[in-house]
Length: 276
Ligand SMILES: Cc1cc2nc3c(=O)[nH]c(=O)nc-3n(C[C@H](O)[C@H](O)[C@H](O)COP(=O)(O)O)c2cc1C
Image 1 (cartoon, rainbow, N blue to C red):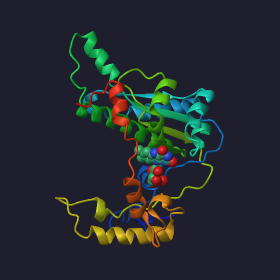
Image 2 (cartoon, rainbow, N blue to C red):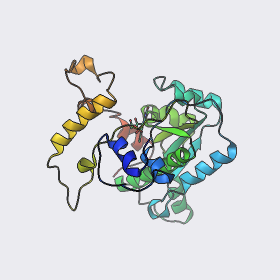
Image 3 (cartoon, rainbow, N blue to C red):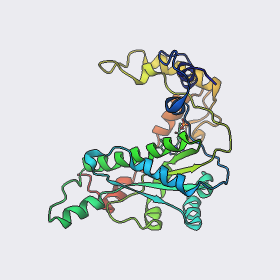
């Protein structure tokens, strides 16, 4: 555990980076720098008032043009939660987490507002889709950070999109609404450990994008990360074989090489997003 934010930053990147020197490792910034996904929870329920406050934190996120174009479904019914969890047995905490929320981009309210005021709805575009999706993602992340600041753990679940049709049905989502991400929340059962990030000189550019030195920096990151948090199982070995040296960049490249949810645009169009 570090004493300054600089120490926490070194932990985050696995290497010292400039910044945080002399600033005490406390408060919201320290908690955010140490955040991580939590997939194992104690069974204790969240007090109702705390959940209400977390949902208000979610709704306190900024929103493009104040559209507030998202909805959050709190899956409070255990049978309903188990039905969603059963769709993704590889993530058993989805069925059992003390709280399961589903964050849904939502153009239905905007469309209804236009209809009520006798106006055409002209945001059924790719840009409109991005606006509503970003709104929902920001609300989720604000909720997740608020949860972590109160000592809770959480995990975003994009796997809901692997089962978008079924979840749409289970949650009775109207046209113009789709399940973007789940969020499980609960009291952590296991200790917190941060996962190593790409160094800032790869991700943060000064004045203009500059990829010079990126390959070497990523190779060094691969090596650093394999020492501290080795990847236990190579992805898609049946397809790509066993690599003698393996690291983060090969792991994500193997994932990028295989299409994911290639039929999602068709699902969205059926849901009333033209993406024009
Ligand atoms: C948009 C988004 C979707 C995610 N979906 C899943 C998921 O479906 N299942 C899962 O176990 N983790 C999921 N995660 C958690 C990521 O795997 C995790 O954030 C990443 O490995 C980095 O680890 P950390 O959050 O502990 O720093 C998701 C995270 C984000 C931000």
